[in-house]
Length: 499
Image 1 (cartoon, rainbow, N blue to C red):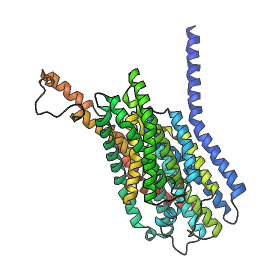
Image 2: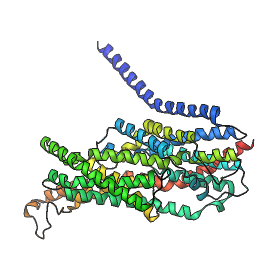
Image 3: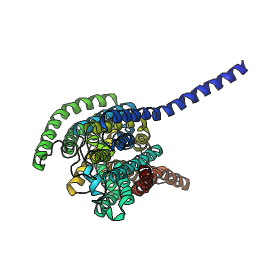
């Protein structure tokens, strides 16, 4: 019998190992099927003319890029909600996939001018084929870098990856004089501006929540007073965010109209939120739940709206160069003045974002939502709201910012504030006034107690520093790494095209 049990255990371990390998291979296999479908579709229905081969190849590369934009960039929008236990991983993937695709299809825009003209200024004598090779090398380099970063669990800016790729291939094609250095300087500045702004705004929001609600003796009564106003403010901010950023490619009202719309939605949200908060707070208080649970629904709504706006804006990171390639192939002109975003190109980007998020997104979601610092609904709510506010403030000031850097900066900002309050004993004026007198009961009775207290304080590290170093290094390296990779790829593709 012992002999039989021993061999049965081996069979069970072998079966578990085979299932693990199957799960590991399933995602790349499904991604391969998606890219094969793009290849067949592009070859059968979209490509024509002497440069048709390059359009088909670019469509596959654009699909590859869309997969990993979804896997890496989209994960930032739902990571805090997963970490805050407002959404399960499966629910977060479903919400993000639906709203990212909706944003891309309904309001997806064309930022091709930035990709094809503002980063580099092509030589007027450059032919259409040379331009296509430049764009293809750039987007392939960006996709490969984001693929590596996603595998390592590092959230990086897909915009910066595309910029670095196009920059490197442009330099390889026409020399360093083609670079638009003011644009590159603004991008470099955003490495600091984005996370700092995101962190400061998220920490300020969290501190406001602690003072108004979380640390109050009667927290639920305070929530009934203040949470409807906070939900209304969130609704107004996101309405302005979607109007200015998410819907800017289908509707561009002036700022006075935007302000009126934001104020109207603020008032409507307050009227709806007030009775809802009243009911939910009474139930939660009766059950003995945490007041933080009241932030679950606002957080889910915030995550969904962030995904919609992200899909509308950043789908062009995945397929913008592809649209430029299609335009160059059809017109025979490098960097044509007018570049349209064909619906089939937009569809590749929209589907690719959702598929990539579903297949590969959990890695980065866990990094942003769980591994940097511990989240709950109220903290994650501050991060999500901070992302929208920071983008709006930066847009008003004309500062280029990265949504990835903002979200990660917000997570660190909330975590570091909690750490400072916990370790340094920052008093909350809502619950404990400042005093000039020592608390005798808090003094250490023995030297051993003093040492124990010191060690206890040393252990209160609420933010994992090693992730900060890894993520910061990935941010700084993204542009030069993709530029170097694009130079190599340009040499390979151009030599292949010449044969």
